[in-house]
Image (cartoon, rainbow, N blue to C red):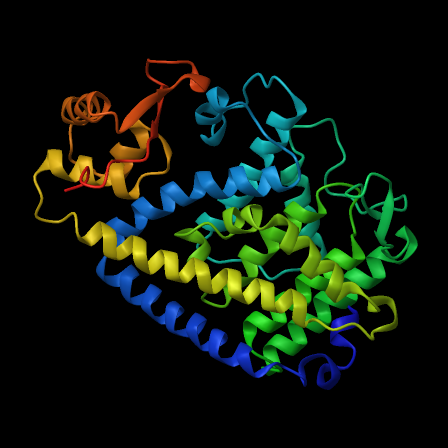
Length: 362
C-alpha cells in the first residue's frame, strides 16, 4: 500500500506527457461506448477473438503454455475434462477466472475475499494451493545473466494480509474521492499488489485479472476487444523492467510509480488504437460479396494462424462451403498453408497466412 501513503508525493510529479496519453484513453472510452450502442454484433465478434488471445498470452507470460492442437478444446468452458499437464489445468483456471470477470453484469468491489476467490479460480483444477495467502517468502529473481539475481524482496508472509487489506481500503478511498485519474490509481494499485506478492504462485496472472476488473469498473473496456495481455506478452522484458524500476525504494515509500505507469498507459493507448483500427476494418467488409469478405478477412484481419471457427465468428452468415472454397483458392495462390503443428487437416486444422505478393490483396 506504499503508493497510497502520501498521495501528493506519489501522484504530484505526473509527467506532462502522460496527460496527453490519458486524454487519448478517455476519448477511446467514449468511442467504445458509442460502438457498443451502434455496433453490438461487431463488438461481440471482436470480444470472441480477443478472449482467446488474452487467455493464451497472460498464461504464456508466466511460462504456462499448451500445445496448439489442444488449444481449441481448452479455451471452451464446460465440464471438466482430462487434462494432460499442470499447464493445461492452470490455463483452464485462467480461462474461467477471466470469463467470470468479462461476463459479470455487475462487478464486485475488490476486497481481500474477492482477490482470494479469483486466486482460487486460477488453481481450481490443480491439487490445492488456490485461495490462500503465502506462507513462505517468495523472492522475485532473474536468471537473465546466467546466475540467480534477486530483483526484489516482497514483504514477509506475516505482513501480507495486513498490507493487502490496507491497499484495498486505501485504493477504494482514493478512487471514491477522485484523488487522481482512474488509470493512475489502477496502475498504483497493481504496482503495490505485485510488490506485496501476496500469494505463493500466480501473482502475475492475478494482477492482470485485477487490472481488467478495475478498468472495467471505471468504464475502460478495451481489454474486451483488443488483447492487453497479448501486448504485455510481446513486450515482456519492458513490462518487467518498468515494474522493477518503479519498485525501487518501495519498502521505504520513496519509489516512483512513473516508469510502470508510463508502460501501462502506453499499452492501453495502443490497445485502443488497435480497437479503432479493427472496428474500421470490419466496417469495410460491408457491401462485399461473401467470398470477397472471407478473402479480405483472411488476408487482412485474421490472426496469422487461424481456424475455421475464427472465420465463422468474424463473418456470421457465411457458410462453411463458401469459406472452404476461398481457403482452397488462397492455398492454391500460395497465400496460406496448412499449419502442420495443429495436426494437419480436419475439424481442428489451422491455417497460417503467408506473406503475400504486392498485388495479392487487390
